[in-house]
Image (cartoon, rainbow, N blue to C red; front, top):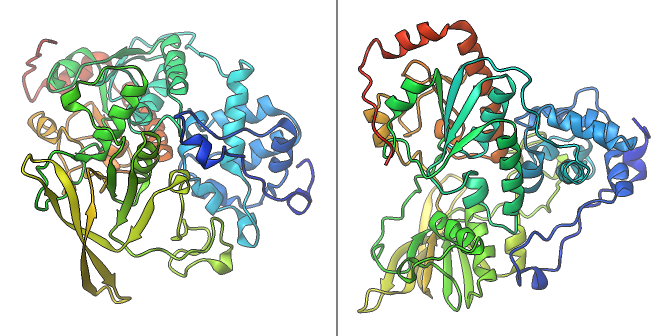
Length: 499
């Protein structure tokens, strides 16, 4: 390492953020990057541990001590190459990952952990600015064809891995542009969409084909895709939202969070939204039901749209407020180091305004004679240590726009998958072996949220990489003529035409 006492010499310095009162006036990213001096100093805090628990904390197994050592010594391009060896898209994870690697940092036992995520983002941006990250098309082609359904982080990572192995890859996406949740689920102020498009263009330059506005099972059948490709990866995500079945759910003004966030992105892209379909918070009393990341994104978006008020409800008790980086001795016994700690976290959106309320259960939406939402009724809840729930007082809250952000429960095309012979598990996700990602149909694989359930972008990338390796082994073990025989000996192929 550059300085074996760097963790004693330098304190953790987080990236500077624009003042909340100023950043809610726009929808751009608001986080600065490290200078080269700060980048080197922060990297020197890494202790190059004999047992690097950050590897365990990161689903990708990022080589954190290795690229920190290179960055500490000023070898930034070499540091980036080590980062890219395990992470296809550090420009995404450096912005939207909650950094479980930092929770597992050995330095975090009794001090502030290494600022791994901030270093990662700075290295990635430096790579694009200096032309170190560029298209890497394969020198030879294998002649094998693979289809990927879904262009979120899982599909993009798998596509890049398979393409670089020489296979011809086509990605099907039902939306008008590739990116999945990276484009239509994460607000611009957290991840600028030009950064998503920049990466997609690099993948195109590497030889990957994208077919957008094409929904598998509607515009084209899975059987047709299987007939034209030797392997298929299903990476459609977990986009079926958990609904809130309470009185007044039908009222105008009650919407799912994803519909609201995706429309906000499309509006910023300049798309025209019909007046009858518009979901906008301007001048409204907004209630966000759900305390997770999606709910937080709704808070930040509503504030930027000029909401009159923003209130966020969470049904669970408030976690202990131990600060953003508690040491080992400060952590709850239920989540000891190096596990992800169960503590109170405040997102950048929650820093910007609005109210948060815990142990609040929504019981009814109420509206006027025109069918418009006017308020929401809630009941307070108290959960004892032995999990007994006590119901408390009722309260009415003014509400013109309610956003349901209660999580996701599986792929929203489960019926089409079942009709195609793809088995689902009891939770509604695709039943695929976690070792080889194979589904119940020969030559069809599944990965990401569609297989494991709602999770992190870093897990999506990891599953995409692992599924790509499984598909590559599958192709190597089977000749093209054997694949077609095995895939279609048990059921006829009935291709559907593309509308």
